View 1 (cartoon, rainbow, N blue to C red):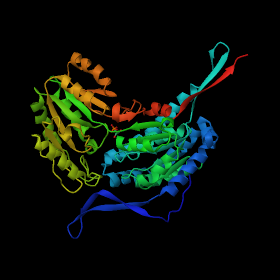
View 2: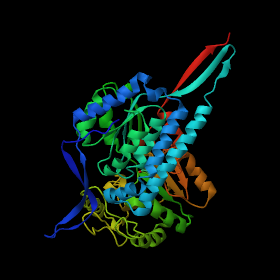
View 3: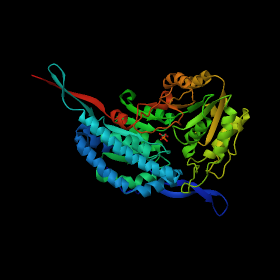
View 4: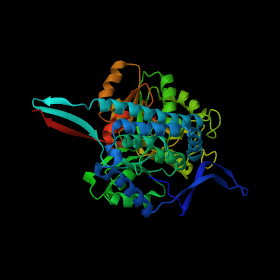
Length: 482
Ligand code: G3H
């Protein structure tokens, strides 16, 4: 809730963009550094959030909705003033291309405006009414308490704010941990938070998660854990809370979204949607298509169109005109991708396009791998990179069985033209994943759609309106009508 001068240790942030040094060794560019908080700073931030909430008696949780919205509108004005800087930092820190980095910023601003509109509607609907003979009732949405929010590296601004903003607007107080890749871009907005909201409402945690999160979770003072990231981290964080059944968790986690291409699919549509769906931002999206099941009768025709389209994607630096495949932020990722492809090759699969090789330590030519089968790592691993596994099937039951036996359940896509065949698939699929896309790629948007998943993919639901519900409880006031 206040700017604190930092004299402690700092950690350097390196860009996925780099070049060979004088000795020929490839080096990532240094972008900046952040303060490495320890347990003391983490607890001070937690204490600030707890004090600002003050068991629901703090200024913020008690503030009228219209006044909270006014604070958020002040924040948006200040945020817009940092647009260029934040977009540049997104490009430098995580290698997202200019168009997508710009979209991430603008989508986030729109998300805040849409959330404000949804809150106004919700507030209007909380007026008093006769609930039954003799009782006037009012059903409200009340805050929950202290929220710990953590976002992922692939949407470091948007997905941090997807939880942070509705949580703030509902009257909670916040601790947010910046992602490891994508932490500096939050700096320019901290002052905007400080000057738009009462002290202690928004508190940031910088540093290594292993140092700052355990004391915060073990304190038992976090009421809501919200994380967009991996299920492994979510499990670990939940275990740290002393009273897990008192903790509300709103999580969006791993996924292995599958697309099915039916025998009568329009292959041009399938190719274009699968291309965008599997390789936008290098495949580093939880909603990316991560495995394609093509009917054996069309798999060759599909690959004949899909592979050249993948090979034609333009590789380049984030700011290069039209760059579609850009450097990967996670160190060691290109080696990981090479190994996972080798694993598939050892089982008899092949790279079907001109891809699958390193251009530099962080830039990787996207690969289409076929035929991928049970037992290969590419069959089940999320992999979160520019590699597209393709499976040939004979009967749709094989595809349904794949989804049943998978640990994930976020989204699926169906490509076909026979309405009866598509309809027959929709019902079983919506009971296995949380969203089915017809002749369209998997994706989160529009942000008014529920964003959730089954099994290891999610807990709770996000989206403009659902998030407001998730970060509040329905409370009631009942007055005897005498
Ligand atoms: O990484 C997961 C994101 O929520 C994906 O969002 O489908 O809009 O790219 P998107």
